[in-house]
Image (cartoon, rainbow, N blue to C red):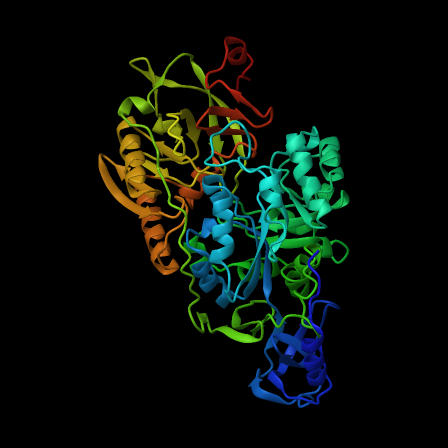
Length: 592
Protein backbone atom coordinates (compact mmCIF):
# COMPACT_ATOMS: atom_id res chain seq x y z
CA UNK A 1 0.00 0.00 0.00
CA UNK A 2 1.11 3.57 -0.54
CA UNK A 3 2.76 4.82 2.69
CA UNK A 4 1.95 7.95 4.65
CA UNK A 5 4.94 10.09 3.56
CA UNK A 6 6.03 13.14 5.56
CA UNK A 7 9.74 13.92 5.85
CA UNK A 8 11.10 15.14 9.23
CA UNK A 9 11.41 18.81 8.26
CA UNK A 10 7.88 18.88 6.84
CA UNK A 11 6.65 17.25 10.01
CA UNK A 12 8.32 19.84 12.26
CA UNK A 13 6.74 22.72 10.35
CA UNK A 14 3.34 21.04 10.40
CA UNK A 15 3.63 20.39 14.14
CA UNK A 16 4.35 24.06 14.80
CA UNK A 17 1.14 25.05 13.05
CA UNK A 18 -0.82 22.28 14.77
CA UNK A 19 0.31 23.57 18.20
CA UNK A 20 -0.75 27.08 17.26
CA UNK A 21 2.80 28.43 17.36
CA UNK A 22 2.92 29.30 13.63
CA UNK A 23 0.12 30.72 11.45
CA UNK A 24 -1.51 28.31 9.02
CA UNK A 25 -1.49 29.01 5.30
CA UNK A 26 -5.27 28.87 5.32
CA UNK A 27 -7.97 28.58 7.96
CA UNK A 28 -11.53 27.59 7.08
CA UNK A 29 -13.71 29.06 9.79
CA UNK A 30 -17.38 28.78 10.66
CA UNK A 31 -18.07 25.46 8.96
CA UNK A 32 -19.88 22.24 9.81
CA UNK A 33 -17.45 19.32 9.54
CA UNK A 34 -18.69 16.05 8.05
CA UNK A 35 -16.35 13.70 9.88
CA UNK A 36 -16.26 10.54 7.81
CA UNK A 37 -14.12 8.81 10.45
CA UNK A 38 -16.86 8.94 13.10
CA UNK A 39 -19.99 9.74 11.11
CA UNK A 40 -20.52 12.94 13.07
CA UNK A 41 -21.31 16.48 11.96
CA UNK A 42 -20.19 19.34 14.21
CA UNK A 43 -18.91 22.95 14.09
CA UNK A 44 -15.23 23.05 13.19
CA UNK A 45 -12.35 25.25 12.15
CA UNK A 46 -9.82 23.64 9.80
CA UNK A 47 -6.21 24.80 9.62
CA UNK A 48 -4.15 23.96 6.53
CA UNK A 49 -0.39 24.20 6.11
CA UNK A 50 1.86 22.95 3.31
CA UNK A 51 -1.04 21.25 1.56
CA UNK A 52 -2.05 19.20 4.60
CA UNK A 53 -4.52 19.47 7.43
CA UNK A 54 -2.62 20.93 10.38
CA UNK A 55 -5.49 20.68 12.83
CA UNK A 56 -9.23 20.71 13.41
CA UNK A 57 -10.74 22.67 16.29
CA UNK A 58 -14.34 22.89 17.44
CA UNK A 59 -13.95 26.55 18.44
CA UNK A 60 -13.44 29.33 15.90
CA UNK A 61 -10.34 31.43 16.47
CA UNK A 62 -8.26 28.54 17.74
CA UNK A 63 -5.87 28.81 14.79
CA UNK A 64 -4.17 31.83 13.29
CA UNK A 65 -3.95 31.94 9.50
CA UNK A 66 -2.39 33.98 6.74
CA UNK A 67 -5.70 33.59 4.90
CA UNK A 68 -9.07 33.16 6.59
CA UNK A 69 -12.13 31.92 4.72
CA UNK A 70 -15.46 32.37 6.49
CA UNK A 71 -17.81 29.53 5.55
CA UNK A 72 -20.96 30.92 7.14
CA UNK A 73 -22.21 27.54 8.32
CA UNK A 74 -21.51 25.60 5.11
CA UNK A 75 -20.56 21.94 5.40
CA UNK A 76 -16.96 20.78 4.96
CA UNK A 77 -16.21 17.27 3.68
CA UNK A 78 -13.24 15.46 2.15
CA UNK A 79 -12.77 15.70 -1.61
CA UNK A 80 -14.54 12.93 -3.49
CA UNK A 81 -12.72 9.90 -4.90
CA UNK A 82 -13.87 7.88 -7.93
CA UNK A 83 -13.00 4.27 -7.12
CA UNK A 84 -12.86 3.10 -10.73
CA UNK A 85 -12.88 5.15 -13.91
CA UNK A 86 -11.56 5.04 -17.46
CA UNK A 87 -10.60 8.65 -18.15
CA UNK A 88 -10.66 7.93 -21.86
CA UNK A 89 -14.44 7.55 -21.73
CA UNK A 90 -14.76 11.28 -21.04
CA UNK A 91 -13.45 11.65 -24.62
CA UNK A 92 -11.08 14.40 -23.48
CA UNK A 93 -7.51 14.45 -22.22
CA UNK A 94 -6.79 14.20 -18.46
CA UNK A 95 -6.36 17.95 -17.97
CA UNK A 96 -9.80 18.61 -19.48
CA UNK A 97 -11.28 15.84 -17.36
CA UNK A 98 -9.80 17.57 -14.31
CA UNK A 99 -11.37 20.87 -15.36
CA UNK A 100 -14.74 19.13 -15.55
CA UNK A 101 -14.73 17.23 -12.24
CA UNK A 102 -12.87 19.56 -9.86
CA UNK A 103 -15.83 22.00 -9.67
CA UNK A 104 -17.98 18.97 -8.83
CA UNK A 105 -15.79 18.12 -5.83
CA UNK A 106 -13.80 15.20 -7.21
CA UNK A 107 -10.18 15.55 -6.10
CA UNK A 108 -8.89 12.01 -6.78
CA UNK A 109 -9.62 9.20 -9.21
CA UNK A 110 -8.45 5.60 -9.41
CA UNK A 111 -8.12 5.09 -13.14
CA UNK A 112 -7.57 2.12 -15.39
CA UNK A 113 -6.07 3.25 -18.73
CA UNK A 114 -6.86 -0.01 -20.47
CA UNK A 115 -8.78 1.73 -23.25
CA UNK A 116 -5.68 3.48 -24.58
CA UNK A 117 -3.54 0.50 -23.56
CA UNK A 118 -5.51 -1.71 -25.94
CA UNK A 119 -4.63 0.73 -28.72
CA UNK A 120 -1.07 1.77 -27.83
CA UNK A 121 0.12 -0.65 -25.15
CA UNK A 122 2.68 0.59 -22.62
CA UNK A 123 3.08 3.79 -24.61
CA UNK A 124 -0.58 4.50 -23.95
CA UNK A 125 -0.27 3.98 -20.20
CA UNK A 126 2.89 6.08 -20.05
CA UNK A 127 1.09 8.82 -21.98
CA UNK A 128 -1.80 8.88 -19.50
CA UNK A 129 0.64 9.02 -16.58
CA UNK A 130 2.55 11.91 -18.14
CA UNK A 131 -0.60 13.71 -19.27
CA UNK A 132 -1.94 13.63 -15.70
CA UNK A 133 1.24 14.86 -14.02
CA UNK A 134 1.04 18.15 -12.17
CA UNK A 135 -2.74 18.39 -12.28
CA UNK A 136 -4.72 19.60 -9.25
CA UNK A 137 -6.68 16.34 -9.64
CA UNK A 138 -4.86 13.32 -8.19
CA UNK A 139 -4.89 10.65 -10.87
CA UNK A 140 -3.92 7.21 -9.58
CA UNK A 141 -3.46 4.32 -11.98
CA UNK A 142 -4.18 0.61 -11.85
CA UNK A 143 -2.10 -1.29 -14.40
CA UNK A 144 -4.25 -2.80 -17.13
CA UNK A 145 -4.30 -6.57 -16.68
CA UNK A 146 -6.26 -7.63 -19.75
CA UNK A 147 -4.76 -6.19 -22.92
CA UNK A 148 -6.46 -7.67 -24.83
CA UNK A 149 -9.39 -8.72 -22.67
CA UNK A 150 -9.56 -12.06 -24.51
CA UNK A 151 -8.07 -13.87 -27.48
CA UNK A 152 -11.41 -13.58 -29.29
CA UNK A 153 -10.62 -10.12 -30.66
CA UNK A 154 -7.77 -8.18 -32.24
CA UNK A 155 -6.31 -5.36 -30.18
CA UNK A 156 -3.56 -2.89 -30.98
CA UNK A 157 -1.26 -4.22 -28.27
CA UNK A 158 -0.61 -7.04 -25.84
CA UNK A 159 0.68 -6.53 -22.29
CA UNK A 160 2.36 -9.32 -20.37
CA UNK A 161 3.49 -9.62 -16.77
CA UNK A 162 6.89 -8.10 -17.54
CA UNK A 163 5.27 -5.08 -19.16
CA UNK A 164 3.19 -4.37 -16.07
CA UNK A 165 6.14 -4.96 -13.75
CA UNK A 166 8.06 -2.18 -15.51
CA UNK A 167 5.59 0.40 -14.17
CA UNK A 168 4.99 -0.91 -10.65
CA UNK A 169 7.42 1.55 -9.06
CA UNK A 170 5.60 4.62 -10.35
CA UNK A 171 4.40 6.60 -7.31
CA UNK A 172 0.83 6.88 -8.62
CA UNK A 173 0.42 3.20 -9.48
CA UNK A 174 -1.82 1.50 -6.92
CA UNK A 175 -2.00 -2.04 -8.26
CA UNK A 176 -3.35 -4.31 -10.98
CA UNK A 177 -6.52 -3.26 -12.76
CA UNK A 178 -9.71 -5.22 -13.27
CA UNK A 179 -9.07 -8.89 -14.01
CA UNK A 180 -11.61 -9.13 -16.81
CA UNK A 181 -10.73 -12.61 -17.97
CA UNK A 182 -12.50 -14.22 -15.05
CA UNK A 183 -12.54 -17.73 -16.60
CA UNK A 184 -8.76 -17.39 -16.88
CA UNK A 185 -8.51 -16.52 -13.20
CA UNK A 186 -10.93 -19.21 -12.03
CA UNK A 187 -9.20 -21.89 -14.11
CA UNK A 188 -5.70 -20.84 -13.06
CA UNK A 189 -4.40 -19.73 -16.47
CA UNK A 190 -0.73 -18.77 -16.07
CA UNK A 191 -0.98 -15.23 -17.42
CA UNK A 192 -3.85 -14.29 -15.10
CA UNK A 193 -2.36 -15.96 -12.05
CA UNK A 194 1.01 -14.31 -12.62
CA UNK A 195 -0.55 -10.85 -12.97
CA UNK A 196 -2.51 -11.28 -9.74
CA UNK A 197 0.64 -12.51 -7.99
CA UNK A 198 2.54 -9.50 -9.32
CA UNK A 199 0.19 -7.18 -7.47
CA UNK A 200 0.25 -9.23 -4.28
CA UNK A 201 4.05 -9.41 -4.24
CA UNK A 202 4.21 -5.64 -4.52
CA UNK A 203 1.72 -5.28 -1.65
CA UNK A 204 -0.82 -3.62 -3.93
CA UNK A 205 -4.49 -4.13 -4.71
CA UNK A 206 -5.83 -6.30 -7.51
CA UNK A 207 -9.16 -5.14 -8.90
CA UNK A 208 -11.88 -7.49 -10.07
CA UNK A 209 -14.44 -7.70 -12.86
CA UNK A 210 -16.95 -10.52 -12.44
CA UNK A 211 -20.38 -9.76 -13.92
CA UNK A 212 -23.12 -12.22 -12.91
CA UNK A 213 -20.58 -14.66 -11.41
CA UNK A 214 -21.92 -16.45 -8.34
CA UNK A 215 -21.30 -19.59 -6.29
CA UNK A 216 -18.13 -21.64 -6.57
CA UNK A 217 -16.67 -19.67 -9.50
CA UNK A 218 -16.95 -16.52 -7.40
CA UNK A 219 -15.26 -18.28 -4.49
CA UNK A 220 -12.42 -19.35 -6.74
CA UNK A 221 -12.07 -15.84 -8.13
CA UNK A 222 -11.93 -14.32 -4.65
CA UNK A 223 -9.38 -16.88 -3.51
CA UNK A 224 -6.93 -15.37 -6.00
CA UNK A 225 -6.77 -12.32 -3.73
CA UNK A 226 -8.89 -10.11 -5.96
CA UNK A 227 -10.46 -7.57 -3.68
CA UNK A 228 -13.06 -5.49 -5.53
CA UNK A 229 -15.76 -5.64 -8.16
CA UNK A 230 -17.76 -2.98 -9.98
CA UNK A 231 -19.93 -5.20 -12.19
CA UNK A 232 -22.83 -6.23 -9.93
CA UNK A 233 -26.26 -5.59 -11.41
CA UNK A 234 -28.48 -6.90 -8.59
CA UNK A 235 -28.54 -6.67 -4.81
CA UNK A 236 -28.27 -10.47 -4.27
CA UNK A 237 -25.21 -10.59 -6.53
CA UNK A 238 -23.57 -7.68 -4.71
CA UNK A 239 -24.40 -9.12 -1.30
CA UNK A 240 -22.75 -12.40 -2.22
CA UNK A 241 -19.65 -10.45 -3.21
CA UNK A 242 -19.68 -8.57 0.10
CA UNK A 243 -19.91 -11.89 1.93
CA UNK A 244 -16.93 -13.12 -0.11
CA UNK A 245 -14.70 -10.24 0.95
CA UNK A 246 -15.00 -7.89 -2.03
CA UNK A 247 -15.14 -4.12 -1.83
CA UNK A 248 -18.30 -3.55 -3.85
CA UNK A 249 -17.90 -0.55 -6.14
CA UNK A 250 -21.39 0.74 -6.85
CA UNK A 251 -21.29 1.98 -10.41
CA UNK A 252 -23.36 4.81 -11.81
CA UNK A 253 -21.92 5.77 -15.18
CA UNK A 254 -23.25 6.97 -18.50
CA UNK A 255 -24.31 3.53 -19.73
CA UNK A 256 -24.19 1.14 -16.77
CA UNK A 257 -26.36 2.57 -14.01
CA UNK A 258 -26.46 0.18 -11.07
CA UNK A 259 -27.12 2.48 -8.11
CA UNK A 260 -30.86 1.83 -7.96
CA UNK A 261 -30.40 -1.93 -7.88
CA UNK A 262 -27.49 -2.00 -5.41
CA UNK A 263 -28.42 0.67 -2.89
CA UNK A 264 -30.41 -1.80 -0.73
CA UNK A 265 -27.15 -3.56 0.27
CA UNK A 266 -25.78 -0.40 1.91
CA UNK A 267 -26.39 -0.03 5.64
CA UNK A 268 -24.38 0.89 8.72
CA UNK A 269 -22.91 -2.63 8.88
CA UNK A 270 -21.90 -2.96 5.24
CA UNK A 271 -21.23 0.61 4.14
CA UNK A 272 -17.49 0.63 4.80
CA UNK A 273 -17.09 -2.17 2.26
CA UNK A 274 -18.83 -0.17 -0.47
CA UNK A 275 -17.58 2.67 -2.67
CA UNK A 276 -18.88 4.79 -5.54
CA UNK A 277 -17.48 4.54 -9.06
CA UNK A 278 -18.43 5.87 -12.47
CA UNK A 279 -16.43 3.47 -14.69
CA UNK A 280 -17.38 5.38 -17.86
CA UNK A 281 -18.72 8.93 -17.84
CA UNK A 282 -19.29 10.84 -21.06
CA UNK A 283 -18.67 14.59 -21.51
CA UNK A 284 -22.29 15.69 -21.81
CA UNK A 285 -23.17 13.86 -18.57
CA UNK A 286 -20.15 15.36 -16.79
CA UNK A 287 -21.24 18.80 -17.91
CA UNK A 288 -24.97 18.56 -17.15
CA UNK A 289 -25.25 16.02 -14.31
CA UNK A 290 -21.88 15.87 -12.64
CA UNK A 291 -19.57 13.17 -11.39
CA UNK A 292 -19.37 11.58 -7.92
CA UNK A 293 -21.44 14.50 -6.56
CA UNK A 294 -24.27 13.34 -8.83
CA UNK A 295 -24.12 9.84 -7.33
CA UNK A 296 -24.18 11.26 -3.79
CA UNK A 297 -27.24 13.38 -4.61
CA UNK A 298 -29.02 10.48 -6.24
CA UNK A 299 -28.24 8.06 -3.40
CA UNK A 300 -29.35 10.58 -0.78
CA UNK A 301 -32.56 11.32 -2.67
CA UNK A 302 -33.33 7.59 -2.54
CA UNK A 303 -32.97 7.51 1.21
CA UNK A 304 -29.32 6.75 1.92
CA UNK A 305 -28.02 8.65 4.93
CA UNK A 306 -26.00 11.56 3.48
CA UNK A 307 -23.02 10.93 5.76
CA UNK A 308 -22.89 7.30 4.64
CA UNK A 309 -23.07 8.49 1.03
CA UNK A 310 -20.11 10.80 1.59
CA UNK A 311 -18.19 7.98 3.27
CA UNK A 312 -18.72 5.82 0.17
CA UNK A 313 -17.29 8.67 -1.89
CA UNK A 314 -14.25 9.32 0.31
CA UNK A 315 -12.74 7.35 3.18
CA UNK A 316 -14.01 3.92 2.08
CA UNK A 317 -12.21 4.19 -1.25
CA UNK A 318 -9.07 5.72 0.24
CA UNK A 319 -8.76 2.97 2.85
CA UNK A 320 -9.41 0.22 0.34
CA UNK A 321 -6.60 1.38 -1.94
CA UNK A 322 -4.18 2.16 0.89
CA UNK A 323 -4.29 5.92 0.36
CA UNK A 324 -3.63 6.49 4.02
CA UNK A 325 -3.51 10.29 3.94
CA UNK A 326 -6.56 10.86 1.74
CA UNK A 327 -10.31 10.62 2.21
CA UNK A 328 -10.79 12.39 5.55
CA UNK A 329 -10.35 15.77 7.22
CA UNK A 330 -7.98 15.09 10.10
CA UNK A 331 -4.46 16.16 11.12
CA UNK A 332 -1.78 15.09 8.64
CA UNK A 333 -4.19 14.25 5.82
CA UNK A 334 -3.86 15.94 2.45
CA UNK A 335 -6.03 19.06 2.39
CA UNK A 336 -8.36 17.89 -0.36
CA UNK A 337 -11.82 19.03 0.66
CA UNK A 338 -15.10 20.51 -0.49
CA UNK A 339 -17.72 22.86 0.89
CA UNK A 340 -21.47 22.84 0.23
CA UNK A 341 -24.65 24.33 1.68
CA UNK A 342 -27.20 21.51 1.63
CA UNK A 343 -26.41 18.07 3.01
CA UNK A 344 -29.37 16.43 1.25
CA UNK A 345 -28.97 18.18 -2.07
CA UNK A 346 -25.22 18.41 -2.33
CA UNK A 347 -23.89 21.01 -4.72
CA UNK A 348 -20.23 21.89 -4.24
CA UNK A 349 -19.45 25.57 -3.66
CA UNK A 350 -15.64 25.28 -3.28
CA UNK A 351 -13.05 22.61 -3.99
CA UNK A 352 -9.62 22.65 -2.37
CA UNK A 353 -6.83 20.35 -3.59
CA UNK A 354 -3.62 20.25 -1.60
CA UNK A 355 -4.85 23.25 0.35
CA UNK A 356 -5.33 25.38 -2.76
CA UNK A 357 -8.70 26.69 -3.92
CA UNK A 358 -9.03 25.04 -7.33
CA UNK A 359 -12.73 25.57 -8.06
CA UNK A 360 -15.56 27.78 -6.82
CA UNK A 361 -19.21 28.11 -7.76
CA UNK A 362 -18.94 25.65 -10.64
CA UNK A 363 -15.79 27.10 -12.22
CA UNK A 364 -12.13 26.13 -11.96
CA UNK A 365 -9.86 28.80 -10.49
CA UNK A 366 -7.40 28.24 -13.35
CA UNK A 367 -7.75 25.81 -16.25
CA UNK A 368 -5.50 22.79 -15.91
CA UNK A 369 -3.32 22.13 -18.96
CA UNK A 370 -0.86 19.50 -20.07
CA UNK A 371 0.92 19.53 -23.43
CA UNK A 372 2.32 15.99 -23.57
CA UNK A 373 2.11 14.70 -27.15
CA UNK A 374 0.03 11.51 -27.56
CA UNK A 375 1.15 8.47 -29.58
CA UNK A 376 0.31 8.62 -33.28
CA UNK A 377 -3.08 7.05 -33.96
CA UNK A 378 -3.74 4.86 -37.01
CA UNK A 379 -7.00 3.68 -38.53
CA UNK A 380 -5.87 0.74 -40.63
CA UNK A 381 -9.27 -0.40 -41.84
CA UNK A 382 -9.65 -2.46 -45.03
CA UNK A 383 -11.11 -1.04 -48.24
CA UNK A 384 -14.81 -1.03 -47.41
CA UNK A 385 -17.65 -1.57 -49.87
CA UNK A 386 -21.33 -2.29 -49.48
CA UNK A 387 -20.48 -5.98 -49.79
CA UNK A 388 -18.39 -5.70 -46.61
CA UNK A 389 -21.64 -5.40 -44.63
CA UNK A 390 -23.76 -8.02 -46.35
CA UNK A 391 -24.77 -11.13 -44.39
CA UNK A 392 -25.48 -14.19 -46.59
CA UNK A 393 -28.53 -16.04 -45.29
CA UNK A 394 -27.26 -19.51 -44.41
CA UNK A 395 -30.06 -20.22 -41.97
CA UNK A 396 -33.59 -19.19 -41.04
CA UNK A 397 -32.90 -18.10 -37.47
CA UNK A 398 -30.00 -16.14 -35.98
CA UNK A 399 -28.64 -15.12 -32.61
CA UNK A 400 -29.44 -11.45 -32.06
CA UNK A 401 -27.65 -9.28 -29.49
CA UNK A 402 -30.34 -7.66 -27.37
CA UNK A 403 -29.05 -4.37 -25.94
CA UNK A 404 -30.63 -3.45 -22.61
CA UNK A 405 -31.31 0.16 -21.52
CA UNK A 406 -28.80 1.52 -18.96
CA UNK A 407 -26.91 -1.78 -18.83
CA UNK A 408 -23.81 -3.18 -20.52
CA UNK A 409 -24.96 -6.77 -20.18
CA UNK A 410 -26.91 -8.06 -23.17
CA UNK A 411 -29.22 -10.96 -23.92
CA UNK A 412 -28.92 -13.57 -26.64
CA UNK A 413 -32.20 -13.62 -28.54
CA UNK A 414 -33.04 -16.24 -31.20
CA UNK A 415 -34.93 -14.58 -34.04
CA UNK A 416 -36.24 -15.62 -37.43
CA UNK A 417 -34.38 -13.34 -39.81
CA UNK A 418 -35.68 -11.27 -42.68
CA UNK A 419 -34.12 -12.31 -46.00
CA UNK A 420 -34.02 -10.51 -49.35
CA UNK A 421 -32.17 -11.81 -52.40
CA UNK A 422 -30.32 -14.37 -50.33
CA UNK A 423 -29.00 -11.99 -47.67
CA UNK A 424 -30.13 -11.01 -44.19
CA UNK A 425 -31.47 -7.45 -44.02
CA UNK A 426 -32.50 -5.20 -41.17
CA UNK A 427 -36.07 -5.44 -39.96
CA UNK A 428 -36.95 -2.06 -38.48
CA UNK A 429 -40.50 -3.19 -37.68
CA UNK A 430 -39.06 -5.69 -35.21
CA UNK A 431 -36.09 -3.49 -34.22
CA UNK A 432 -33.47 -5.82 -35.69
CA UNK A 433 -30.48 -4.01 -37.18
CA UNK A 434 -27.14 -5.05 -38.58
CA UNK A 435 -23.91 -4.59 -36.64
CA UNK A 436 -20.30 -4.82 -37.79
CA UNK A 437 -16.99 -4.71 -35.94
CA UNK A 438 -14.05 -3.85 -38.21
CA UNK A 439 -10.45 -4.47 -37.12
CA UNK A 440 -8.50 -1.21 -37.30
CA UNK A 441 -5.07 -1.81 -35.70
CA UNK A 442 -3.16 -4.32 -37.85
CA UNK A 443 -4.91 -4.32 -41.21
CA UNK A 444 -6.04 -7.91 -40.81
CA UNK A 445 -9.18 -7.26 -42.84
CA UNK A 446 -11.30 -8.89 -40.13
CA UNK A 447 -14.96 -7.85 -40.11
CA UNK A 448 -17.35 -9.43 -37.63
CA UNK A 449 -21.01 -9.27 -38.71
CA UNK A 450 -24.13 -9.79 -36.63
CA UNK A 451 -27.56 -8.54 -35.67
CA UNK A 452 -28.63 -6.32 -32.78
CA UNK A 453 -31.87 -5.24 -31.16
CA UNK A 454 -32.64 -2.36 -28.81
CA UNK A 455 -31.65 0.70 -30.88
CA UNK A 456 -34.94 1.25 -32.75
CA UNK A 457 -33.27 2.98 -35.70
CA UNK A 458 -35.70 3.47 -38.58
CA UNK A 459 -32.95 4.58 -41.00
CA UNK A 460 -29.26 5.37 -41.24
CA UNK A 461 -26.22 4.12 -39.37
CA UNK A 462 -24.05 5.03 -36.38
CA UNK A 463 -20.32 4.34 -36.18
CA UNK A 464 -17.60 4.76 -33.57
CA UNK A 465 -13.95 3.89 -32.95
CA UNK A 466 -14.82 3.51 -29.25
CA UNK A 467 -15.52 -0.21 -28.90
CA UNK A 468 -14.45 -1.69 -25.58
CA UNK A 469 -11.91 -2.92 -25.02
CA UNK A 470 -9.92 -3.44 -28.20
CA UNK A 471 -11.47 -0.36 -29.78
CA UNK A 472 -12.00 -1.59 -33.27
CA UNK A 473 -14.53 0.20 -35.47
CA UNK A 474 -18.15 -0.60 -34.58
CA UNK A 475 -21.11 0.20 -36.85
CA UNK A 476 -24.85 -0.29 -36.27
CA UNK A 477 -27.22 0.42 -39.13
CA UNK A 478 -30.18 -0.30 -41.34
CA UNK A 479 -28.54 -0.52 -44.77
CA UNK A 480 -25.15 -1.67 -46.00
CA UNK A 481 -24.77 1.61 -47.92
CA UNK A 482 -25.11 3.80 -44.84
CA UNK A 483 -22.98 1.46 -42.74
CA UNK A 484 -20.21 1.75 -45.33
CA UNK A 485 -20.43 5.56 -45.31
CA UNK A 486 -20.40 5.72 -41.51
CA UNK A 487 -17.36 3.45 -41.25
CA UNK A 488 -15.47 5.34 -43.94
CA UNK A 489 -16.28 8.66 -42.24
CA UNK A 490 -14.80 7.52 -38.93
CA UNK A 491 -11.73 6.07 -40.64
CA UNK A 492 -11.16 9.28 -42.61
CA UNK A 493 -11.34 11.35 -39.39
CA UNK A 494 -8.59 9.25 -37.83
CA UNK A 495 -11.08 7.96 -35.29
CA UNK A 496 -14.28 9.32 -33.83
CA UNK A 497 -18.07 9.05 -33.90
CA UNK A 498 -20.59 9.79 -36.62
CA UNK A 499 -24.22 9.46 -37.66
CA UNK A 500 -25.33 9.12 -41.28
CA UNK A 501 -28.54 8.59 -43.21
CA UNK A 502 -29.48 8.39 -46.86
CA UNK A 503 -25.89 8.88 -47.96
CA UNK A 504 -25.48 12.07 -45.89
CA UNK A 505 -23.34 12.65 -42.80
CA UNK A 506 -25.63 14.10 -40.11
CA UNK A 507 -22.93 14.70 -37.52
CA UNK A 508 -19.41 13.72 -36.57
CA UNK A 509 -16.92 14.11 -33.73
CA UNK A 510 -13.21 13.51 -34.45
CA UNK A 511 -11.34 11.62 -31.71
CA UNK A 512 -7.79 11.66 -32.96
CA UNK A 513 -6.06 10.61 -29.71
CA UNK A 514 -6.11 6.80 -29.95
CA UNK A 515 -9.53 7.04 -31.62
CA UNK A 516 -10.85 7.62 -28.08
CA UNK A 517 -10.21 11.22 -27.07
CA UNK A 518 -10.34 14.71 -28.51
CA UNK A 519 -7.67 17.36 -27.95
CA UNK A 520 -10.44 19.97 -27.69
CA UNK A 521 -12.05 21.46 -24.53
CA UNK A 522 -14.72 19.37 -22.86
CA UNK A 523 -17.37 22.02 -23.56
CA UNK A 524 -16.77 21.63 -27.30
CA UNK A 525 -16.83 17.85 -27.14
CA UNK A 526 -20.00 17.87 -25.02
CA UNK A 527 -21.73 20.18 -27.50
CA UNK A 528 -20.81 17.98 -30.46
CA UNK A 529 -21.85 14.90 -28.52
CA UNK A 530 -25.29 16.39 -27.89
CA UNK A 531 -25.65 17.07 -31.61
CA UNK A 532 -24.81 13.45 -32.35
CA UNK A 533 -27.36 12.28 -29.79
CA UNK A 534 -29.97 14.49 -31.45
CA UNK A 535 -29.02 13.04 -34.83
CA UNK A 536 -29.50 9.50 -33.52
CA UNK A 537 -32.88 10.46 -32.08
CA UNK A 538 -33.91 11.86 -35.47
CA UNK A 539 -33.25 8.39 -36.87
CA UNK A 540 -35.61 6.86 -34.32
CA UNK A 541 -33.09 5.71 -31.71
CA UNK A 542 -34.65 5.29 -28.27
CA UNK A 543 -31.47 4.69 -26.27
CA UNK A 544 -30.31 7.64 -24.15
CA UNK A 545 -26.76 7.22 -25.45
CA UNK A 546 -26.52 4.75 -28.34
CA UNK A 547 -22.80 5.43 -28.88
CA UNK A 548 -21.93 4.24 -25.36
CA UNK A 549 -24.23 1.25 -25.82
CA UNK A 550 -22.47 0.42 -29.09
CA UNK A 551 -19.09 0.62 -27.38
CA UNK A 552 -19.96 -2.25 -25.07
CA UNK A 553 -21.45 -4.50 -27.74
CA UNK A 554 -17.88 -5.45 -28.68
CA UNK A 555 -16.75 -6.34 -25.15
CA UNK A 556 -16.53 -10.14 -24.98
CA UNK A 557 -16.23 -10.39 -21.19
CA UNK A 558 -19.70 -9.00 -20.42
CA UNK A 559 -22.56 -11.53 -20.79
CA UNK A 560 -24.37 -12.79 -22.72
CA UNK A 561 -23.71 -12.19 -26.43
CA UNK A 562 -21.18 -9.81 -28.00
CA UNK A 563 -19.49 -9.23 -31.36
CA UNK A 564 -15.79 -8.74 -32.10
CA UNK A 565 -13.83 -8.51 -35.33
CA UNK A 566 -13.46 -12.30 -35.10
CA UNK A 567 -17.17 -13.00 -34.87
CA UNK A 568 -20.04 -13.52 -32.47
CA UNK A 569 -19.03 -14.39 -28.89
CA UNK A 570 -21.10 -16.48 -26.50
CA UNK A 571 -19.73 -14.93 -23.31
CA UNK A 572 -21.35 -17.54 -21.07
CA UNK A 573 -19.26 -20.21 -22.79
CA UNK A 574 -16.38 -17.79 -23.52
CA UNK A 575 -16.24 -18.98 -27.12
CA UNK A 576 -16.90 -17.84 -30.68
CA UNK A 577 -20.29 -19.06 -31.85
CA UNK A 578 -22.06 -19.11 -35.23
CA UNK A 579 -24.52 -16.38 -36.11
CA UNK A 580 -27.13 -18.83 -37.39
CA UNK A 581 -28.85 -21.48 -35.30
CA UNK A 582 -28.76 -25.15 -36.19
CA UNK A 583 -31.97 -26.98 -37.03
CA UNK A 584 -31.96 -28.58 -33.58
CA UNK A 585 -31.55 -25.19 -31.92
CA UNK A 586 -34.42 -23.79 -33.96
CA UNK A 587 -36.59 -26.72 -32.96
CA UNK A 588 -35.78 -26.09 -29.30
CA UNK A 589 -36.99 -22.46 -29.34
CA UNK A 590 -39.99 -22.23 -27.00
CA UNK A 591 -43.27 -21.50 -28.75
CA UNK A 592 -45.56 -18.84 -27.36
